[in-house]
Amino acid sequence: MLIKVHAAFINSRDWRLMRAKPSFDRLVKGGLLRPKNPILGVNMAGQVEDAGSGVRQFQPGDEIFGYLSRYGGRTFAEYVCAGENEAALKPDNVTFEQAAAVPLAALTALQALRNHGNIQPGQKVLINGASGGVGTFAVQIAKAFGTEVTAVCSTRNMEMVRSIGADHAIDDKNREFTQDGQQYDLILAVNGNHPISDYLRALKPEGIYVVAGGSMAQLFQAATIGKGISNTGRQKTHIVSQVPNLDDLLFLKDLCASGKIMPVIDACYPLSKTPDAFWYFEKAHPMGKVVITMEENQNVQGERKTSNAAADRYIAHCGNDCTQCPLYKYDCMEGCRGTACANYCETCAVRLCNRKYSIANCAQCEEYPCQILEKQYENMAKDGYGDWALAARKALEEIQRG
Image 1 (tube, rainbow, N blue to C red):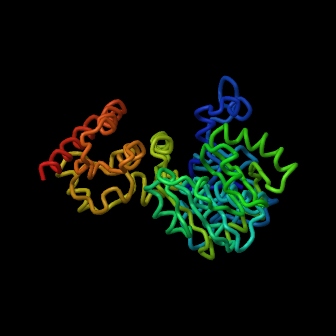
Image 2 (cartoon, rainbow, N blue to C red):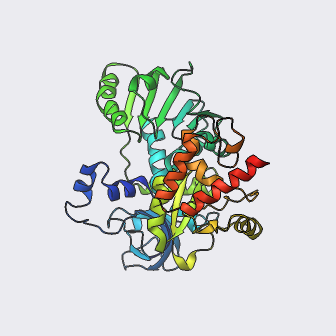
Image 3 (cartoon, one colour):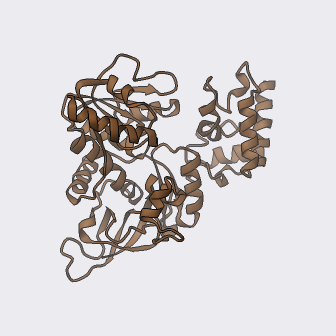
């Protein structure tokens, strides 16, 4: 089939291939001296433009979404080719942007929990790395299976994971879930860098530990120590190897249609600004998915929309148009009081400051101005945002003066 793409999304697979992390991943998948496939992307949502004579499930005009592996993906483009077993009809209650964010991340979460974790109703399930692309789907899918879900994430994402169904949220900076005495039937590690002994301590005697990501050390221990423990003990360890599967995609389509799962989208960028999207994906540690849209379909996003009044108030105060910032999101200026850009601090400084202050209220901290804040100003200047750093300084000085 020939598909007119409306939206695609960036996932860690694309980022790893682009950055050669690990380096052997590029050697295996991407070519030694030049990329075998110069176009990234494997997920898409779009419309069938034309279909071959052997296609039975779709016809021109159908709105579909899918995970394209047969032809190497290449979904960061206006048109792609796809096999009919790689796609499903898009649910009516989701947008193209939302549908594009489903396949790879949700398939990984589903297969991790169901195929490897043998998830059952009533179990206690912990998701480590619950606020990312796979993690947000894992929380919702685990709830759809009738379990009690504990989500581990950063401070700024705790309310979000609760809003998508988590029964409990643990701040990974202030509380160590491996030391609090709680035990779980199933632990899914989407992120993290814990020794396998920590996970097994938090696991019930017959529990299952599933690894879908995290540090190389975490993956290596799961593959070696975890395998040995699985062969000799009652606790089991599995590493997720996600496999494209049409039945699973149809299962996820039904979950979307019923409202049991819904993609969490952090930001959308037009195709022409794909480099900016990758920069944001890498630097900002997004909450949920970063989506690529085709320019003619761009109705939100790109640098996502906010109220004109808030934007005008900010621009009048500091002289900068924050909608041009690569870190800009649709909710950046919600409740904006014309102070400095809180989004930058939320994605950078707050990760370093153990007092959890953001740029909007750093001036109220007894340690202000601290070395952490000064370092962020330096980083902003190095990254080409010197004007933004200057505006932040001025705003903080005004707050301090009252």
